[in-house]
Amino acid sequence: MHPERFESWLTVGTHGLYCRPGGFHIDPHSAVNRAVITHAHSDHARAGHDHVLATRETLALMKARLGSAAKLGTQALGYGETLQVGDVTLRLVPAGHVLGSAQVVIEWRGRRVVISGDYKRSADPTNPPFELVPCDLFVTEATFALPVFSHGDAKGEVAKLFKSLKQFPERAHVVGVYGLGKCQRLIALLREAGYAEPIYLHGTLAACCQIYESFGVELGALKPATGAKREELKGAIVLAPPSAIADRWSRRMPDALTAFASGWMRVRARARQRGIELPLVISDHADWRELTRTIAETGAHEVWVTHGREDALLHHIQSTGCAGRALALIGRQDEES
Ligand SMILES: [Zn+2]
Ligand SMILES: [Zn+2]
Image (cartoon, rainbow, N blue to C red; front, top):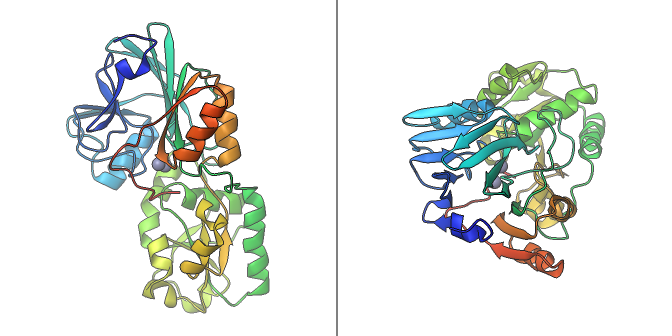
């Protein structure tokens, strides 16, 4: 192992990214002995690890979603606290993606590596903002790593939803949201904009909302959609997982108008395919401009790309004179965006 040759001490094996001098994996995609988890989305937090280290929020969300966060033991690390793990120093700093999401900062023999996990730079009332950490090697996500992706201002998208509610006051506005992150961010954005009505939830969304609230994120009045009177749901905002908006479930709503809050809604064809009347471009991931800006701001002379579209970003990185590498980790999926 040599500190300046990152691939000698940060290796990519069958379980994913492994820090040799620390003796742990980061977001491994199959069960390992020691895992450091950036956040609770399923493409990062898998079940079955013996030991898991993460933020308290991430551990709580993993427990709710997976049954347990680890088989043998968990260790919570707060943002900014440092910990000696094996021969490395480890720190978690906010990634601005979802509740508890963290970048993993590893230092070994004078070199600093930052593994971003998923991140965004735009404001989100439900979790602390992304913190920039200068580093030698930056490992970045790449979910929306094409110049066509520009997410714009989430407040403007929320305004579109209000406009539609005004225009169609009799229709239930059924908005597809990912259960962890997007759901709570959209609720918080609605509240910030002054919306005080109860917001109705598909049953699968309640658990994560409760965890957000237990960590002090106020979401206002939430009611289960199932069992609510038809009359009550006219002109109401109903949140549901993407899988439910196209099926029988949403047809029970009074004259449902279907919306979907996702960075993918920038692609019109995706919205059409899903039969979405009101696409809302709200993303919890960095867009192209945020990705390239963040990479530049870290000052890293080497950048590894993972979790998404690697080619265009790799090309961009190399054009700026940095060393770039696509990790092409197996077992990933783009479930949550
Ligand atoms: Zn994620
Ligand atoms: Zn991800």
